[in-house]
Length: 244
Length: 244
Image (cartoon, rainbow over all chains, first blue to last red; front, side, top):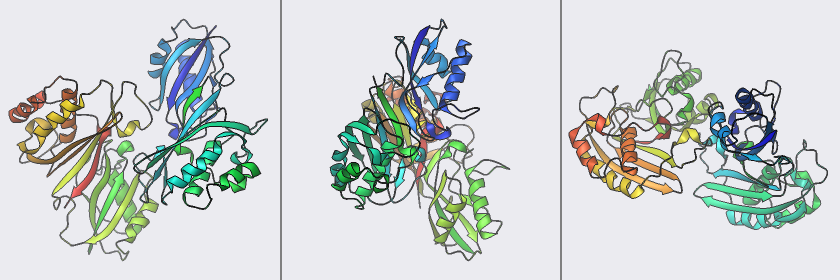
């Protein structure tokens, strides 16, 4: 059997996340159905991670095994004709038999988009979190540096994950501001459940001076979920890239 | 009766345009229903113009007459609790009795957004036209100047309009480029049916060197629809502002 790797983009607005559900409106349900129609095989894809309802992806990775004779590169266009218009295959290629979208992953990069404007907007509302109070970007940038490196991120996970250790390494936390749009780019070797959304929720608290930048160090070391900020809404989050 | 003016934002993706239809999924159907629920009156709003299916608005203007005692400024919040999440009232105020959203209008500004990228994307796909061939921005800017001023824009209207004269004045045609996003801002005293979309479609032809910038002058003066470009898709168009 050949092992095919796909890179996917999807608009998570209309989906209950990635992971398949019985008769569910999930990205995996749609993708697996499209591949089955194409290959006439009872395949199931392996995804790089779960994503929550409403979360988007620009570089989601899956792999699946197939006996189909369809050339690997052809899957891209063939699947795009069968997928709904909110899911797009960016590339398809054959990979070695031991490639596993999840277990082979060495890390990921997410983006989180805030629109910082006192007047909300409906245009593009599914792709950012509109935060109405003015955020202090300099304070947020000062706070962001404390997340970098290897820490126990116990305070930055919601219930629902199942992990052996809560230690993770954050390698990048960049903040780009363009008019009222604030984009966070967070990369690391792995993420706890809702970790990026809680980091952003905490940085928002810093941005309105409810948390001092230097307090972030203590919040991390104390490991108490309640001391960190709320999870920022799903719609602002996008899985940008999976590293192998 | 009082005359109330509203400024609306809407995401046109899910609607058959502004104009009400019997049992139709239009913005006016939704808005009129919300106002009727609130005022218990059989009101009908007057809109500043029709918009096509899929076209968005950031500054759409309507007015309506009411005997309701609701303070004019309260309509904003009261209506926002009753409207779907793709329609937003930005402001509400009382205006003089002779104000008419359409007939009092002195002009409008539209924006048109192109994403110029060989790789399409699903994220934000309802808010721009993804054009895959590389566009020559300098050629487009040269061509754009020919639209400025007062001209007979007969070549830049599609069937479906009903106007006495096809002479219009374009006062602004600005082009802003930000990475792969190209934004056109077009303002004028009035627009023929699909006029902005045909102007953009023509500028796209200039951008791939199928039309020379200087040919635009001739296309305008000859007045033959077929010599201009195709109408660019609805999703890239947004009514930004109505001038009074």
